[in-house]
Amino acid sequence: MQCVKIMFKLIHKEKNSKARLGKLNTPCGEIDTPCFMPVGTQGTVKTLSPNELEEAGVQVLLSNAYHLFLRPGMEVIKKTGGLHKFISWGKPILTDSGGYQIFSLALLRKVSDKGVEFQSHIDGMKHLLSPEDIIDIQCLLGSDIMMPLDECVHYPCSKDQARVAMERTIGWARRSKVALSQIQKSKSQNSQLLFGIVQGATYEDLRKECAKEIIDIDFAGYAIGGVSVGEPKNLSNDIVGFTAKTLPQDKPRYAMGVGLPEDIVEAVGLGIDMFDCVVPTRYGRNGTAFTSEGKLTVRNSPYTDDLGPLDKKCQCYTCKNFSRAYLRHLFNSEEILGLRLVSLHNINFYLGLMRDIREAIKNDRYTEFRKDFLKSYNNPYEQVKA
Ligand SMILES: [Zn+2]
Image (cartoon, rainbow, N blue to C red; front, side):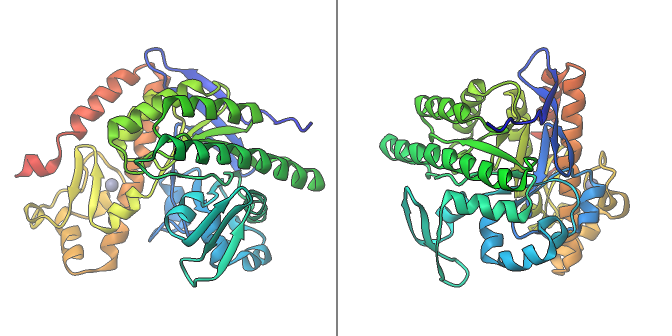
């Protein structure tokens, strides 16, 4: 039996909450947790260069096996020597299987125990991807952390439907682990990590059952899938909370697709270590900045002649060099620099937030940190300025 190396070190458990400080070792380097992974679905964090991400302190990027498999396809990535080289990013990469995207984007999908049959949302070509194929693809990409194929359900979802998807997810997880072990045995290396995903929709008993089965298979880390799929916020917090309680202490825990700054702050307090979300760059391209005092829409008229930075507490390139008035002007003139500058600030804001979170955990003051952050963040500029 292949033994899983110690990849995760739990450094400190905060005294008054369930927040944890840790270090995750991957083939391309260490990741301090809790961490935020900017999303580069197509092998790029939209509008930002790897250099800018590195300067912001990004330690791990998220990309998507399904998207890269469809376009540009595996041949060119293989020829380049893997995804890291293809996108010129030397630090860790986590790839999502794309299960969620297959279920939300692909046309005419047919799910069976074999895998998922679907038509590409790009060119209509038919594909069948099995859990084994998804592992193969991620091995070729050279992902530091890979995710198995899982079946996601939408919200709301009946318990029967949730159970079928959950049972299929468990079966696929088992097959994914076997597939990876075989590939690693043949290459005599076992450095790429595979996480297990806990599904079960909004049903606590299904989540518990799924967690138990997935933990029995034994993965390098555990993800909570099927949250942030349209359910109310308090419900996603509940799911994250009761699922996190069932997960082992000595492995990293990842809340997939979470979230907004306030969601991350809550989930860290419930014992989550890893996050990803498209919002910093998606909102950035729409001209919405995340700041220490809440969200700010740069197009709004109060900023016409506001010469202050987006966030006075931020030291990023955007905040050090440009005013809200200029950023508003860029958005109103539809200049691409505006999209880049606000995206850059937002990524810096998220990475700064994660550093503050880790510092607060280290000093056993997470409860105060959470309270102060939410107090200041729920007092958005928009209201103050109006
Ligand atoms: Zn900034």
